[in-house]
Length: 250
Image (cartoon, rainbow, N blue to C red; front, side, top):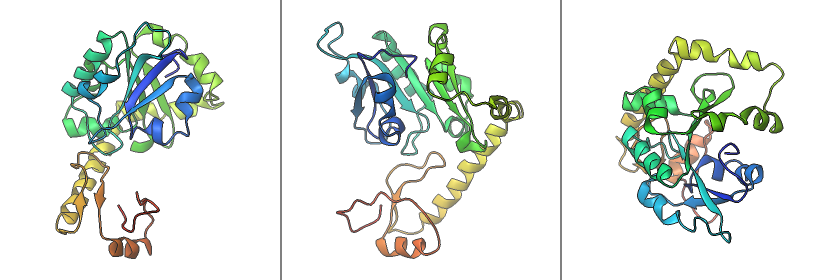
């Protein structure tokens, strides 16, 4: 995001976005930008949801919209199709803005859509990509891929200032070679998606369990009775969305 913006800009993303919910305010701190969360029914932005926030361009009293962030797969387990990414990119570029894709689970999306990474990123209009392997079998290590030279120019400096230049960077980076060249990424994602389908097939047998989103990846979101959750917690650890005022586990 630092490569895309200046401190007087604003960044638009879904209210469930990882950088809004799970990064302790890092995007605002690291960029100085105004953050603009947008409520969505399924974790995915659309041109219709973005357009109302595209205003006040050239007015110095207001932050200037400059970047849109999308997560692929979304934080609710839903997948942007190639056409949906293109539609957002076309709108963003129309206003001279940039599109950033968080690709922590990009491999799972490609398997679900039966398409290549290229089709779902640069060919669809993505300007810069956070490419993740940690959630798909790599021990650790992520890559930032800028598809335009003007965005790539300062990445080494942002990386260093963010304390992300590891002393043994080559050991982290080397994982990417077999991961990509031997299509480990595809096999891992295919296996994860298939295992999720097996879980769905079992859970669908119980009418008291309701999926909140259509299962499209290896992330499943559903509601279940409190008593069942309490029994599971005796032997397994899992994360719930229960709020203090609620008596049921989500």
